[in-house]
Image (cartoon, rainbow, N blue to C red):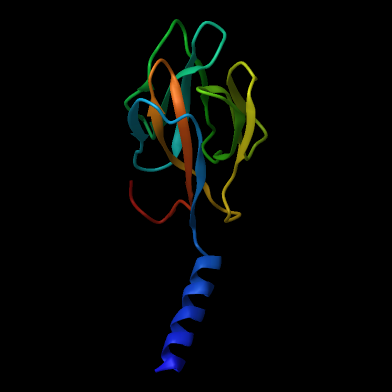
Length: 161
């Protein structure tokens, strides 16, 4: 019986090390309403709004040609990046205090989208698997994004979207 338990534990450890999914722990105060931005396929564009040259006010992803709901709020003109066909988000960094003060989304092509103003505590998020990319985000908002968590996975290129 112990042998089976040990084998099951070893199998779980091997699977965990090769996991194609990971998440980055939440940053920010976490107050307000919850949000989750998800979609099918790869993220192809990102829009983000900042509040009066200050914190991140809202964010939106495009999956394929379909734009998600906006997490947070809009204000004036957004900053936007359209990704190339083989481009993906591989890192999110920035600063947080009560709100997500700033956010930088970096692609595998070295391009980035920066929104907000850097002040507060630093964060840096990236996947644990070398082929993974940003698939969706979740968190909370009130008066801007107050919490942010990144979810990473390897995109199955054989799946029909």
